[in-house]
Image (tube, rainbow, N blue to C red; front, side):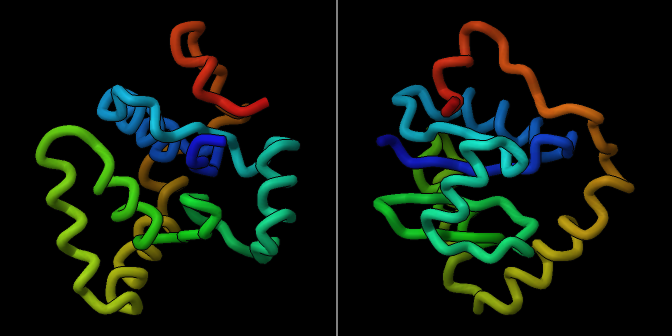
Length: 130
């Protein structure tokens, strides 16, 4: 199985982030599933992730990353200068996650919320786990 990114399928910011990652991941390193989907729930259960985790989740080499660690680990694998963001992994996790938490807490207010999860176009549908 490829590496899996779980995202909030109802969040406009999260859906935009998925589109951003897909465009910068030409080798298709990552697959995607919404946190709210059946497969997303199965992955969360399989990896013993707390039900209360409301964050971007990355399963990479069977290891679970959440919040800023997930985002930075993803950036390391994107084409272009985005790889450079991984440098911020040296910032202590509580500080990184504090900043991540501010955006996450306000994401619906700032970016909006969808009533339904994203429906991928045909050309990227294969990147989503069903």
